[in-house]
Structures are given as structure tokens and as C-alpha cells.
Image 1 (tube, rainbow, N blue to C red):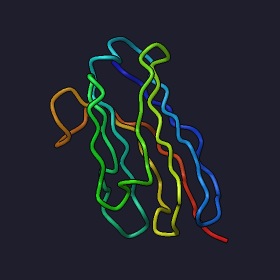
Image 2: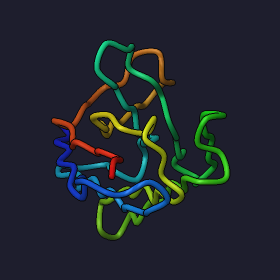
Image 3: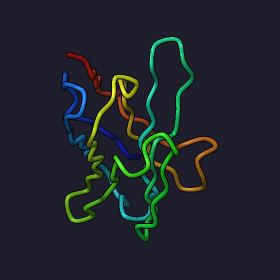
Length: 118
């Protein structure tokens, strides 16, 4: 069993930065691929970034060059560094863990709100 708790969301002006954290409890964190999804009001949940157990990363086109996902297995934590934020990045951001691909993640966090506005 893995429990995920996100933190670091908030209100930021366009062009600003935020770093989200997702702390995992339970065993075997290092063998899970980790990812960040987001869901804006009235829109479907979107996979933003993923990092595999061997630290291979992938990003949605909308965030490439602005967001960076990383993980610290010693701390059971995955991060999402978000730079050059835009109003369209406003959403609830969810951390997820997956053993066998991103079609159906095994575990989800509760979400953290990110609002990009003046």
C-alpha cells in the first residue's frame, strides 16, 4: 500500500515558479513510476509529467521546457518544479504512482491547487 500526500500549491503570478512535492509512505516507492496529473475546471484530467524508476522522464507538450519532474528515493518524494507559469496552468495537481503504465495508476494523492493569476 502506498499513500501519497502533495504539498506546495498556491497562488502565483504569471511568469512565476512553484515547486510541488509528493511524499509517499509505504514500501517499495523506488520501484514505482511516479507522475503528476492536473485537472482544470470543466476539463479532463491531463498527464503532465512522469518519471520512471530509473529516472526516465516524459512531459506533456504544454509544459516541456518549463516543468521538471524529479524524485528522491531516499526521501520517498517526487517533485514538480514549475517555471514560467501561465494562467492556463491553473488546475488541481495530483500525484500518482504506477507499476504498469499510466492507463490506470495504482495510487493517487488528494491533489493540491495551483492558481496562476494577477
